[in-house]
Length: 179
Image (tube, rainbow, N blue to C red):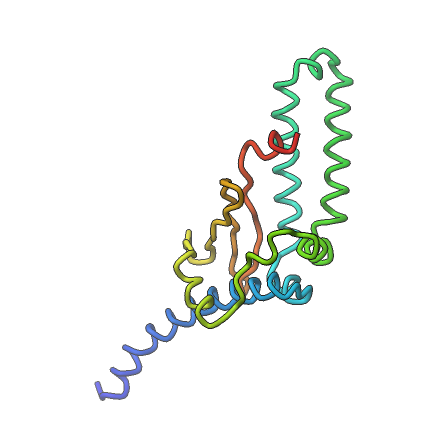
C-alpha cells in the first residue's frame, strides 16, 4: 500500500469521530446561544417541538393517573373521578400545545429570574459542553439541568447532522411540588 492510502485510512476515522462529536457540541452550543440571547429561531431549530410536546403530554397524563389512583376523593367519585381526570388531561394537553413552542419558551425566558445566571456562550462554553454531555447511544446524548436541587435530564437526538432536544425527564414529584 502506498503512504497516501495508509494515511487516508488512518485519518478518515479520526476525522469522522471528531465531526460526530463536534456536531453534537455545536448543536448544544447553538441551543445554549438561543436561550442566552432569547433567539426564537435558534430555539426553534434545535428543538423537535412535536416530539417534545408528545413526551411532555405523556408524562403529565401518567402523573395525573398516578395522582388519581392515590386520591381517595377521586376514588369516591367513581366514574365521575375518571371523567374529571380525563378533562384535566385534555386541559393540560391544550396548555402544552399552546405554550410549549418557541414563543412560549421565549416568554418564559424573558420572565425568568434566573436568566442572569446563564453563562454567556463563548468558545470555552462550546468546548466545556463536552464535559456535561453523556452519550447514551450513537444517536443520543443528554445533559442534566439542575434547578433548586432537582435534576432534569434533557435529551438530544441526532437528526441528520444536527441534534435536537426531543425529551425532558421531570422528577416524579414535580406535580406534587406544584401543589
